Image 1: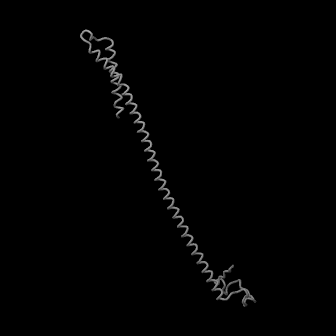
Image 2 (image 1 turned 90 degrees about the vertical axis):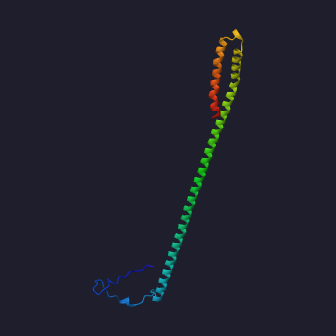
Image 3 (image 1 turned 120 degrees about the vertical axis):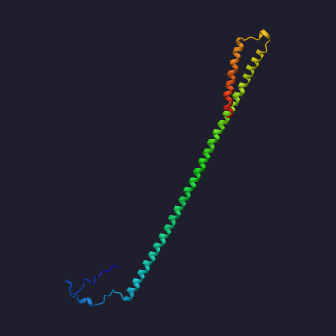
Length: 168
């Protein structure tokens, strides 16, 4: 409904736009009584109050939904961080296990290498010992002895170098 605003301050006896209006002293057929106007105004006030309350309720609902969404996202963020931390720990454990397995394989190989060198070392030492057991003039420094001494030293150095790595 369109309402025309009337500014009574402009309507004074000195106003220049005043006219005689013969039919102005009658009551229009579509006019309402003060009681109808009051009922209509009260209904408008109640309707406006219901709309305002609906708006408050809706805003409260939206605030609750936004708060829940925020809480859900924070919870999800924490869960993702926990999952990442767990996966990082699992990856580190796996890498450490791989490293330990490689080290154990390396130690086993070094122990095998030492074991493989023991027999040639025993042979060289036995030959030298047998060579030094010769009686009297038979005990002389010959090329065989000169060859056996460095061979034993080379094998011993190889074993000495390998043992710390095998235990280590």
